[in-house]
Length: 108
Image (cartoon, rainbow, N blue to C red; front, top):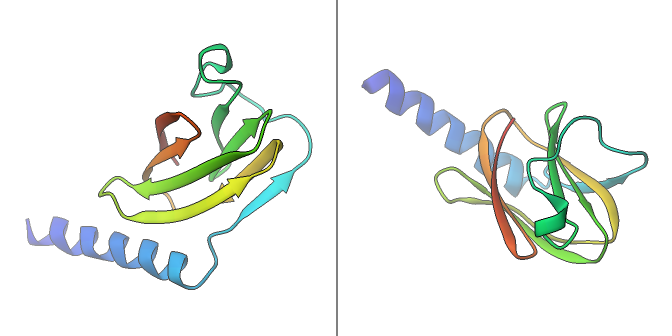
């Protein structure tokens, strides 16, 4: 149990330090994401969420507000994304992504 608590504390500290230091930043990417979207674009206003090479990738047809939380509810990133494809590189873990009107769990 102590080992679990120590690991959990370390994960929280790493997520907090990355967010506080400004290293967590969305960037636009070109090209189509490879693989299958976690969300169905037909039922989510054209928003698609992917996990790709250690990053959360979001493809959208219009400007959206995005928030990313750790599985413990700590805010990691908050941004307004333009139309197109954007990605956010994060440490391995499980994150909750709220993009527009959908919320989706993403494991990296």
